[in-house]
Amino acid sequence: MKNIIKLWIFLPLLVACDDLFEPAIENNRDVDAMYDEPSYAQGILANAYVLLPYQTAPASDVATDDAVTNDNNNDYLRMATGSWAAINDPMSQWQGRFNAIQYINLFLENVDKVVWAKDSKIRTMFNDRFKGEAYGLRALQMYYLLRAHGGVTEDGRLMGIPILTASEGPESDFNHERKTYAECVEHILNDAGKAIELLPQEYKTFTDVPQKYKDLGVTNASDYNRVNGEAFRGLMSGRIAKAVRAQVALLAASPAFSGGSGITWEKAADYAADLLDDIGGTSGLDMTGRTWYVDADKVTNYGLGGSPAEIIWRSSVDDNNDLEKSNFPPSLYGSGLVNPTENLVDAFPMANGYPITEAEGDYDASDPYLNRDPRLNDYIVVNGSTQGPSSTKIITGTYGTTTDVTNKESGKSTRTGYYLRKLLRSTCNPDPQYNTKQKHYTARIRFTEIFLIYAEAANEAWGPQGKGTHTYSAYEVIKAIRKRAGLGVNNTDPYLESIKNDPDKMRVLIRNERRLELCFENFRFWDLRRWKADLNETTRGMQIGQHTDGSLTYTPMPSVEVRKYKDYMYYGPIPNNEILKWDNLKQNKGW
Image (tube, rainbow, N blue to C red; front, side, top):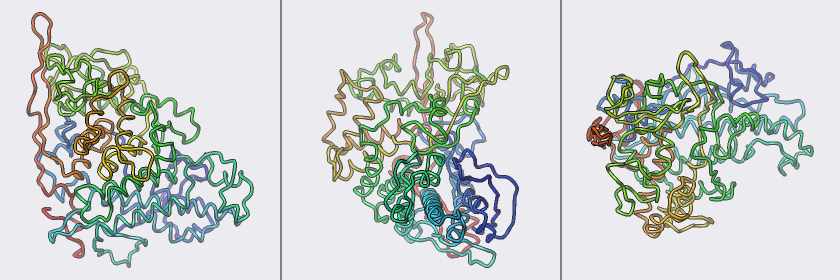
């Protein structure tokens, strides 16, 4: 866990969206040089942004029942099929998160000494904001560490990870012990709380000054905007810190951790509601939010760092076609990398809202994609649907004439009968002759996720229609999400109505809605583990043939890929090399 600090000088970040974080030259100057050079001090904190843990493409999804990959050398494929070990852990967050925390702690130890501005009032506001960012970023980094490495040790204790609140140098004692899971959760929540207190809810053009700064003598809104205005959108904010708080509370309240986390379902619901109330509860659900990635071009209309209503936090916007090159069908010059499974396809209900297993849904196995949830076509390319800039029909059935056909060409053709659509821009063209690119960004945190956190926690705490101290229930949240998806009959949702008084059936529905809404955003693996659900569901596909009369046949592929997880793998390992180095670190059971 020993970190050697490499300080980077960044461009002045006083107009800071993370789009501007471009490291220049490496520099090993003394830390105290930051006191009179605010840009140098910001460069230290900027490393925590550079080291954010978010993935830009579906990755861990191929280690679940939602997807497989056609890349035989994929680390997640190996993990899911029996090669996951403490010495080979694609899910590890250990090094990256602790590196980020080292920079954050170094910054926090020195932030009060930095001359952010000559005017003492401006200096105080900058100091508050930068400390708020640091606390929020540390909460985020700790959350990812806890999610990946928290678990039950051989002696039956639910443990977290070491809590580091001071920077480390060559003379430091690196032999840290793990803190209890509850202590880690408390630390994250405390850091998030400090961030919420110090930071503006969001960065925008303010017309008034918060009272705490009026009390310091700040009377001009332009002075406040100089520190917290819209030019800083894209940085850690109070709203983002609230989202992180809700995320860690959901994790801690879940079956795998609730016995030793100190967090109840009620508390998790309260934290999610604290953020959702800011947008008016269910009335604030973005009605176009399920396909936010389609409208990336509109981001340029929101100003520096702005986002659509669905997005709480996003990455920078780039012109590229990387996702399309990786995931378009091979006939469109893609590599067909991520293949959705029949397991996931079957999870999409019928258009009337009933699961395909319910008679009222009128599911037809001889025409399985007829009258299905509109999200199925939004997120998955099924046989006969179109993709690409010319709306090319994609044939995965055996009667097809291209390498789009299932298992036609190893390493490119789909293994399941399906290709990925979600996150991709159909207007991109990976054909080398054109190489057309479009705007993309990663949605780091979406409001839909927070709504689903609330629904899950509220159902467990108060039942489907209970509201606690809030003005909306789990039932109302799920009703709004499914209405946005276009489900139901004559503006009603008869299936939802039939289960609205049954917490157990509502739990199944909420988990399924989470699966659908957040598919291919690297949630499924973590959800299955925190629920202690089945990790070993064999992935399935669909083989499609054609009769001489042109009618199609659908033959299930019952075993595309067999999962080989062990029971102890509900909790991830501490890296083996860390266990070998430090005797105070105790490994999770089974590893």
